[in-house]
Image (cartoon, rainbow, N blue to C red; front, side, top):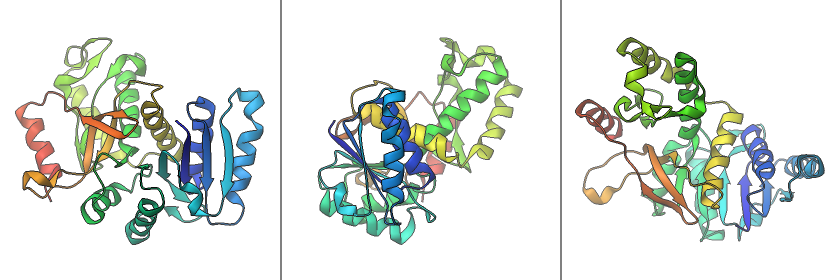
Amino acid sequence: MQAVAIIGAGEIGGALAHVLARRDVVGEIRLIDESGRVAAGKALDIAQAAPVELFATQMSGSTDISTAAGAAIVVIADRMGGGEWSGEDGLMLVRRLVQMASGAVLLCAGASQRELVERGVRELGIARTRLFGSAPEALVAAARAIVALETQGSPRDVALSLLGVPPTHIVLPWDDATIGGFAATRALGEPARRRIDARLPALWPPGPYALAAAASKVIEAMAGGSRQRATCFVAPDDAAGRRMRAAALPVRLGPSGIAGVVLPSLNVHDRVALDNAMLL
């Protein structure tokens, strides 16, 4: 993959640039923020760490959003001192990016950008495979950590999915979850599962470093460095005739964005909960 542009050099954008550079899975990272020389300064700091952290990713910083042109992936993060891109400002930014980087995948890294994904697809006509959000993957990582703590194990041994619209409509399909390759329902009784379910809303929104790690994982998967699936905010498919809202769903990723949505096995209760979460 040639280049990734990150719009916004705030906490999320700066952390993402550093994490992504350390993983050395893209050739170039362009950090862009209109606030003075913040982006250039952070890019220089990261570049100077290359000999110590052993990565070859090229770093650059700019105040000019047009430098995003030609990037394979454009990440919409957070402005320095201005918070995450969202609302009308976020939609205007997406419109500009579509015009100048027409072939790029647009990845929303912020926790408050679910509606931006939905509006970008519905109002601007962007393909739902090219505009999506990575924040739910950070919630999945937190859920795995809680399950591991409950079972006195490692998060690496925990596999689970989270669906819906956090924080109020989160669906964790326990029938599909595993711990060390075994069904999670064997290791966790009903009271423990209810405790975990009750804790999930308090984990939203994730912090900037968790959001940066989630976005980096998604980019790495698109770059071909990982075959892991990720949970992302995905816009609804209105072709079905029902007006739904964007929701967190597990997806397979490829160079062109979302290659497919991979729903886990859902029992009747989980299916109804997910439908209710997605209904407008």
